[in-house]
Image 1 (cartoon, rainbow, N blue to C red):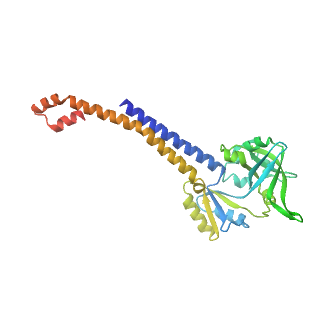
Image 2 (image 1 turned 120 degrees about the horizontal axis):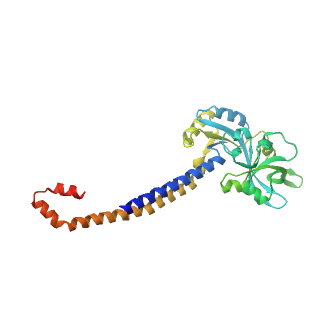
Image 3 (image 1 turned 90 degrees about the horizontal axis):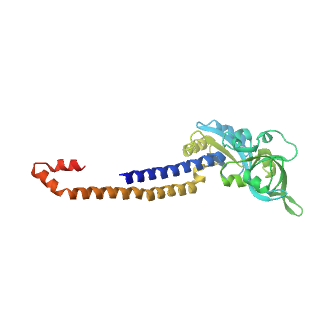
Length: 295
């Protein structure tokens, strides 16, 4: 019985740890990304993103919306270089769809909210900042692959950015290769004047993304598509689920072994009591009474 108790305890602890791990990973992913992302049907940038943001914000179940501009760029400093995903944001709107503003470790969001002169402000993942060996107030250079046409060919677009702070999300993927800048600076860098790459949405219920995306598309009409955090991270959570089941089954074998020991003990006990059982039967005890004794 002690072995059975230990086995059940081990299974519960293992499943609890795996469930907690899944919950922690999900929380950190959703702290840096939105629940639902809205794109133009043909992959074109949004020209009316402000109108889409206001329309989606009025849909029941939507907690926040924000437009964003995405692009890749090469960040360089005096001591290092790294390829980064640059995200242009509106700080006030971004705070309603992700936790990036709350995850700032050094510096603050203020420079991104105010008008700036000179290099545009940028927030770097703390691992990315360490690899570039820069801190708050330092200047980095970003090179965009979307260049401008010149008589000698296409020249990459180069801009200077001033580090306003560092962000720590807890996920290496974001901390090592993501940077956040004002949406106006990103539009200018990636040549998307008055355009946005996508519109991000946070829902009241993170698990109701299918219903929420359906309601959003119904409100916006034709010409839009959506993707959600479940689809984007399906392979990761599928792997975690398989690992959880494998650990549960493996440790569950302890319970099976303990149960077999208990059954074997009871069988031997009954076999040893054959003579006593025969005496009880000869004295008038029924089979049901004897079975109830051993049960």
